Length: 142
Image 1 (tube, rainbow, N blue to C red):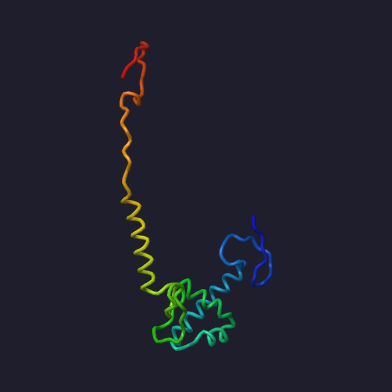
Image 2: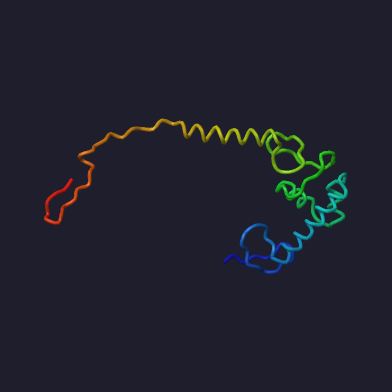
């Protein structure tokens, strides 16, 4: 059992996975996310600083929601993050569309290369490898 202090309120709680927050703080954060999402939907030109100030949440939390693809901004919005591969401005996620396609194609090619490797033939030692049985009379049966 992993017991930790909640980063939100400081209380001890049984940590399972994810952010180190107790159940109450996690629910409060989810509620805050719903409010932020609604606000961004109603104000498509809003920037991260304004959202941070209005809802009293760190910009790092907003960036995390964007990276997790839970929060997305309109294409004409001023808000954006850099693609982790090429640095292109994106509105949600970790990678731009072209980098996602390159990664997917690379994984597909890797899988196909593994599949295309030659298969070694094993010599057939048919008479030596057979299992032998004895019948009820003790005589060998092949």
